[in-house]
Length: 110
Image (tube, rainbow, N blue to C red):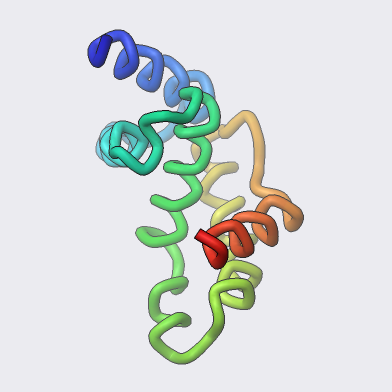
C-alpha cells in the first residue's frame, strides 16, 4: 500500500510541476509522504507540500517570522515569490490569496 501511495504522489508531482528540478521534486515527495500529509488525497497533499516547501526554501518567510511578522502577514508578502517559482516550474496552478489566507487560519486553530 505504501508503494502505491508513493507512486500516486510521484505521478501527481510530475503532473503538477513538470519543470520542477529533480532535487526539489524529491524534497516535495518526502514532505508529501510525511505523516502530516499522508492521510490526504495525493493531489491535496502534494499541493500543500509544494507550497510549504517553496515558502520555506525559496522565500524570506522564516526570516519574516523571526523578525516578528505574524504568519498571515508573512504569507501575504511571499505569495508572489511562491507563484514565481510555481510559474518557473510550469505548475498547473498558482497559489491564490484566498488559499493563502485560509491556510494561515487553519494552521492557527490546529
